[in-house]
Length: 369
Ligand code: F6P
Image (cartoon, rainbow, N blue to C red; front, side):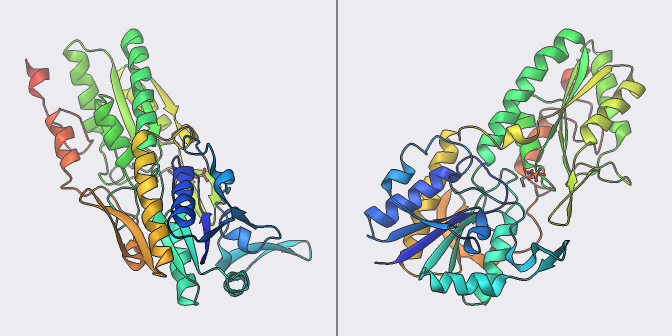
């Protein structure tokens, strides 16, 4: 009987509980292994009572629940933990303690469910002799090596619903309604929800936008008698030659994005004479019950991870490639966050539909008629 640990690191995402459930059910029911939950990401490996047995009772009813029953920590990097020493906060490397603790607990494998940060930590701990299998999750869909991550589909659903709701106000009040969406440096959420929600303008980090092009699109709509516009804007979108907009907050030494939506709305109001409003969808994209697709993907990822864990195949990450669930070397998830490729079919589709991506003005036939 093997002892399998499981942790969820980084921000929460809908579908984490479905993945935990699949790991537990497969490990217990198929392989007869034991599963231990690790609380609050890697932190649980350093905390008292941070590791506890996960049985059927513990996972009952969690499939449709958002969040994670294990808790998550955005600030849990064992290579740089923050501790209080002499009244001051200092950073220290606790990675060796984590590796020792894993051996002490007799864990044969840890399934790490996380985004690029969590997977990077797992890769470093593997080098120190700790066994890990990875499951990619993040609403941003920006993990290299997989076509999709757990949580993305639910976030897109939420964003699309928000666009549908903003559409009615835009139309009734003759306004430009701007929706700022999460995704960090990847535009997947804005692109997919923008197309699905009928946005007129989609601005993503991969394509630096020109304000004049956006204004042209909105003015053209007004000239054609359509006095409202809907804009889906990634938090990481930036104007050509301009800067990304950050909040005055740092998470793990990284500045937090936010504010571009408000700026875009203000400029539209000033330059196009159209009343504009910005909405920041924020963490609503990360909450709530996972969609059937996220539950389906998370269940498949979890079941395969449990199999890999049983087989002792440390250093693997489950992934979706060309519609198939498979596993890859966890090293292949390394590197710069995945972004929407410029030859992406979705971008082409957006252009075909006359959606302005902010890089070049496209007079759409519909507007010319
Ligand atoms: O990576 C997921 C994500 O939701 C990003 O889209 C967003 O930029 C960030 O996390 C928000 O982080 P926090 O929860 O720390 O505000």
